[in-house]
Length: 560
Image (tube, rainbow, N blue to C red; front, side):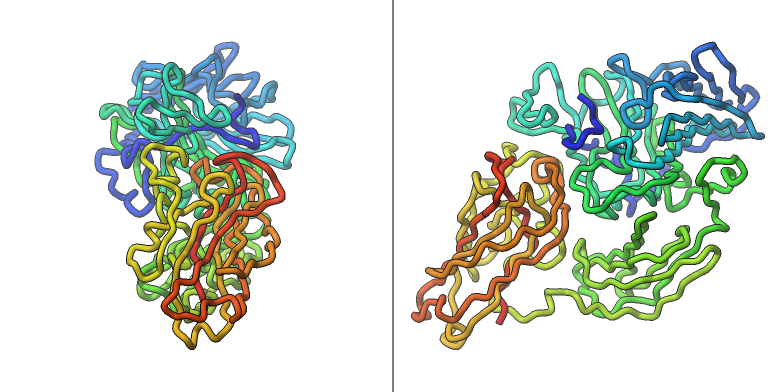
């Protein structure tokens, strides 16, 4: 089944040894991503008739097909790692007939493969066990933008939620979600990571590691919190992915142009060298290679902010930048909120400050080539948590993180045996209400959850605003509320991604707040009695069970 289609497929990640977390990526003792050039005497390439055979002068020899531009061989220290199921490593699902050329410039060998709107580049540098890759996509004639490195099965451990056993596990959804006999679920979608959380993905045996270090994703789409498949492993083959546009849970249109480099790196078992990470990678050596669309350091600018005023110390803040051509992000310093984002293409960007994953401030900012745009302290005024409430369930952070099953759902299916029951009526004031309230609600699964609460005499005499914040929805699922005998109107469906999300490890869509104006006549007049809020999922679309109309909650509160 093609993995670049609109409705994706299966897997998770092997823990800290498999996905590098950005915050801890500097811990790379033992990594050998960059090797000494002392062995570079054999650096060069030859033509075997069907492939360009490139010797890095270290421990890696790889081949690129002269007809398709696929990587057809990856031999490290004499052992072949590449290929499974009769297929090789390539952009998209393989370009097919392509024009492939090669040239050597000093200590760099560069391969160019052209097929219609896509140009794929590969580079080898003398003495390094790395392959540098770029993908240049001009238009939407291909449905997705991903590179898949296909590896032989049985070399690396088959462990984690993004791994499965085709010989014994059972498919439970769309051909790409699997359930094991113990009730655990597995899929290539179950990475459990956002883009901002990792620098690399891969596998290690302890004596050899094979890693794909991601690019800076400036031409990708979805922003810093986007979740997607990163790798997979089963008894038939292994894959590593660089996902630039996958059309799953996408909140943005895809961007076009040159993306990269991303780096395929062999090590002696350790993690890849931190010098290969997108924030650290020195790419000055690529400036004169003639890569189409390449913009070096001199053609880029930066934005720096003094700080952020009005932050909540309980949350991390991220500053994102986006326009139709590029996207970037950077973390704001705890306490001060100071931030700096470098290496940006010139242009005018929408700058968004996120509390957790919730946008709380936006403005425009202009970036110029070679320039630095300085911003004074920004005051955050868009945090809905600032409103006074009668009660609040969860918190406004753009995620369902406080609610039941939320963390598990980034690397498991809702039917997973480890999931707590999706039912969960709660009583305000009873303690641990948020932890008892389900992160997700579906029309066919747990519709009609109840929230019990009491009001004082003064509160019951007034109208109140009820806010229900959601992070995404599937097939237009959205909440309609009933308070005692009062029933709200059916709210308009906001724009949300059209693909699977809640069952493929992502709650990330377009954060939206539904506002319900509840009249004073709706409340119980006897203050000793509980008021009852009922939440139902409505939709004009049909589906069933976990693929029926549903939504993910951010926060629910009743304003004073």
